[in-house]
Image: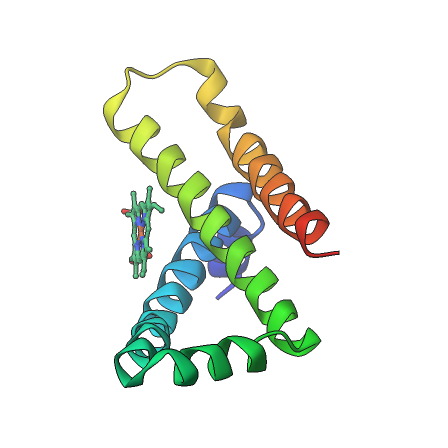
Length: 115
Ligand code: HEM
């Protein structure tokens, strides 16, 4: 138990946790996304109605969380691939910080575009 807690007190563990949580959350979102796109099959009116519903602030907030999760998963995934496929370099230790920075930039850019 004590060893488990010590393992979590490390940026690498948090990078893993963010990557897993964001990956599972994106997977859970995917069916909802396909359902939303499927509204177009029921006609233009139906899709327009759904898009108007999605203009609510709470939905915009949820979209922002989703964008941050996707950005975190993309940046974290590229980090894992760099560790896996590139020869080891010292700067790869800094990739968690680079991935976190890219995630914040993506989230802020989305928010700036909203308001
Ligand atoms: C945007 C580009 C993406 C990249 C570069 C990427 C990259 C990766 C990588 C490298 C892994 C393996 C991590 C590891 O072995 O430690 C992974 C895991 C995973 N990805 Fe992605 N991914 C992307 C998009 C997505 C999307 C759109 C979804 C879901 C719809 C998704 C769902 C998952 C899940 C569920 C896992 C397993 C997580 C785990 O076992 O911890 N990924 N991704």
